[in-house]
Image (cartoon, rainbow over all chains, first blue to last red; front, top):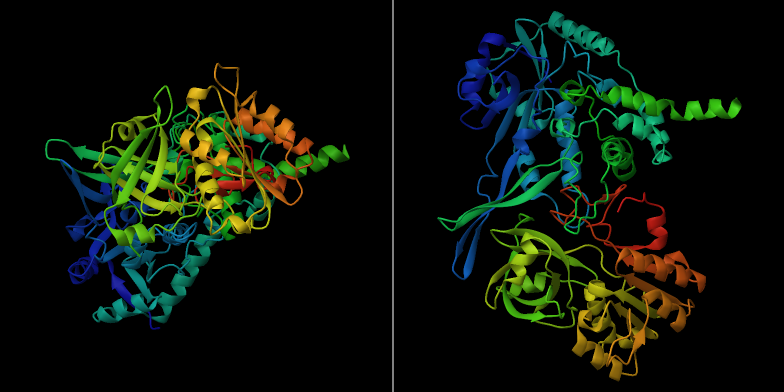
Amino acid sequence: MEQKILKKDEIGKLYNELASEYNFYAPIKKKGNISFEKIEKPEDILLDYLNSKIPPKSILFPQMEVLFEYTLDEKDVEITDRQDLDQKILIFGIRPCDAYSFELFANFFSSHGNWKDEIYLKKKENTTLIGIGCNTPRTTCFCTSVKGNPFNKENMDVFLTDLGEKYLVEGISDKGKEIVKKLSWLSKASDSDLKKSKELAKQAEESITSKIDSETIVKNLETSFEHPIWEEISESCIGCGSCSYMCPTCTCFDVIDETDHYNNRGRRIRIWDTCQSCLYTMETSGHNPRDTKIQRCRNRIMHKFSYYPTNYELLGCVGCGRCISVCPANNDILTILNKIEKIEKEEDEKVVA
Amino acid sequence: MPNPYIPYLTRVKSVITENKVNDIKTIELEFKKEEEYKKFDYIPGQFAEISLIGKGECPIGIASSPTEEGTIKFTIKKMGTVTSGFHGSEVGDIIGVRGPCGNGWPIEDMKGKNIVVIGGGFAYSTLRSLIIYLLDERYRKDYGDITTIYGNRDSGEVLYKDLLEEWEKRDDINVVLTIDREEEGWTREVGFVATIVKKVAPSPENAVAIICGPPIMIRTAVAELVELGWKEEDLLNSLEARMKCGIGKCGRCNIGPKFICTDGPVFSLAELKKLPDEY
């Protein structure tokens, strides 16, 4: 596949060409935060950003989403299914960690039992990703420790490398190659462009200095459910749930009926939920299987680094570091994982001593 | 595949008050569309997400047996918003049903074995389903001796009285009913379920025991069975948890890497021993 060049001042042109076919999402600045939103004016698109505060999972799995609508009459109910799932979605500017999180979502939503989450899966099928490699990963980034890479192209349809005033453009999937072909006005990339992109990728990978040994962590967690370390880990947690709401791989949701009683209609919706809330598992009887903070903090880590590997031979973390930057109590997942990594070693030392 | 969150629509066909204090009712539902009833192909021990559209949804064990054709039944205790709503429902009202969910009792693996069904209080609903199924003339020959021990606080709490009396008259099931304390007019056993288990002393030879009830009853009854030589893989239990979707998506009913809604709700004690104590 031939690589192309997209000049940064041609983003508007790209938008105009694709926005008629797709709902075009890209990062913008909204209320002081960066998030992926549907673009109305191409000049709103933010190109100079490290990553969005709110993960782009919100496009396919919004904070609040309608499952179906209903009308109620005296003795009957009518249900209306979602009609908008065939719309084509394009996400411009997504980072490799977040693109991979979409694969984890799709895997989870098609596993367990006989039912698949068709709402998510249909949207995912109709989504095209034009992603960008990360030239300057943040200090909280650790994708290279969880089998990712700041220049991982695997889960993208089109991959861009920021070369300063322009992007190097590569079609990755068949869908992506078609799009590149369609944008016939893109100029040709030179050898020096390719060389520079390789250098940037190497530099980016080297700049991620946070390192954890995920294999040791997964292994240690198998025998650490009752370990006293969880008490220490959860001590500073205030149970706000920000880590999971902002996590690109957290899929949990609550379901609620919203009824407009004046007009006898309503909708059953799902909203983001978090295992960090004590209400999450609270039963009507008052019994709560995870009624302590220790249990809840443990569940979050175990889910991503033990239950995920057990069920799918994957890690449930993409190393985006959002949970680190949003935590109001500075509870850093890297610190937590480092402690878990050292568990066995400490125990071995104790035995020797 | 269709949107898995949309329920089938059913109408309430009958409502029966099951206990004296009137906080447990059995509602019988008839599907609006025959083809949807056909799709709702269940076995005893499975549950469904049932909803009052506009109020909410909750997981409830299916109390009817697939051999009782035409309708499905749920026995519901009045607890929160949705279950209270069900208690207020009348014949003809619309109720949404999604499912069947979960694994159910292992009726295939149980073939050729003696079956002991132990229940306490309100937890008898999916046991009702199972016993009706086992006693059905098409399937009775596939199973060995059937014993059921059913305990309640007092006689006013005993569910499915007519059905139990019918079973007592049969010679192909041993029905043992018990209440916690002596009561005038009560001619069956008196004592906690565990005590009666010890007295009946079901043999662990080529047998499966199914135990449902409050945690304390399960613990004490299981202890008696273990004493009698039962193995943990032959002791089956059905778990409950808060659920929203019932289909392994909303996340909250996990015990370790397993979901109660899709890997369960039926687990053997041997399986539970391998999972964290978080249910």
